[in-house]
Length: 234
Image (cartoon, rainbow, N blue to C red; front, top):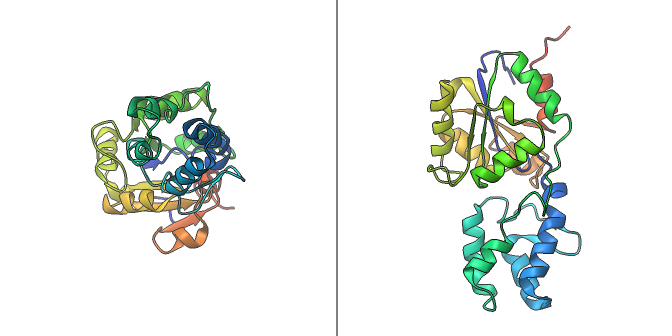
């Protein structure tokens, strides 16, 4: 991929800046156990909806949880746990930094600094809550490098709708054709493509190369490998 004309990069958060399975697998297992109240049938039903393997504590490649917003997940879980109110389900399914700490992908800070060193503007467009996204970036020590952070609740909806990506570009002042959208799932790729951006799939989420290669302009191991493309070749 030629990155010479790239002026901005938008990143998904979970699975792109943070390793999806390491960050959320153990938390999800605890969350499902708490929601089910120890009822194995209810736990299995929740796993089926979310696309999660409780035994391995890993999300499945086609997991609904990966391609949806928290509100969409909560709406599907509430009917499965009649012993809990919607407010209780929301509370259990809304993580904070005491419940789960995001695990950065390989070379996160170094990669972001390399992009900045080439004058590239950076933003995050996530299907997570904006406040939680900002907290995760702050905890990882990288919040200051991003000029814009947009969540599904920022007023533009969630991906694959491109509205959040376009809003981020409005803040950055960069045209879509000079922007990369980087994500680990097809909804990231679809959102970027619909916004007129070039797209990069990364393999730090649940999707495989085969899942992404037909729709992304480029598929790489992670953002560290993307950063390498910005370095001049000898």
